[in-house]
Image 1: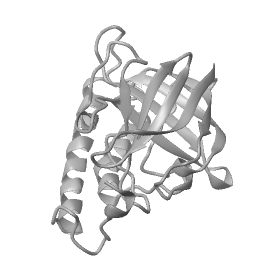
Image 2: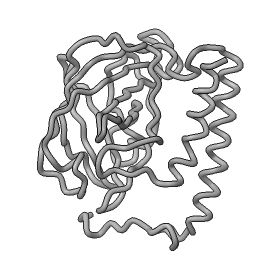
Image 3: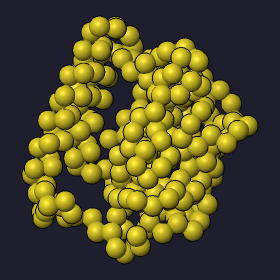
Image 4: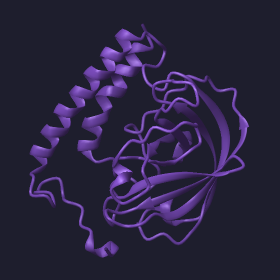
Length: 233
């Protein structure tokens, strides 16, 4: 599929699947409440500072982006180098080599001293399996993706990450039904003195050119709010 063939639905007209924004928004809102309730139950059954991804390691890293993308976004298409913060964790907190869904959280600096968070979880690599969570025996094993798409000027894109060894990861993007296109290298440089319970929230801000769909925000934001509230008790 060519970039020009992908059309992002406007907020005031039906989506490509024939569902009005009001319908998709209602579905996302309901699903978001279900996720929020699930996180709340987990926090009650297993009191911890973080109901999900309770243990992790925080690293300083360098993100080097390579030019040549065709998404219409500065973050994915243009070259650049940023000092970033990375947290590696396991969703349930099971010890290796017990299978668990691994998480890669990436904090990228943006304008005016602010930042944006990107969250990846272990999934399949293929055009369909990238939408399925995949438990792994080792923290760095397997392919990671954002599971949900970001809005760009040329259509929705998913982001992915692959560990390639020597504390190095490759980042990629893909459209619906396309292969992955590598756009950046992430190199861990040192363990950070940041709190190991450092909190990330991808619904609050995004890197330049990427936007969160409103249904995406309604789906995930309530669960993050509940998780943050559980840490203050």
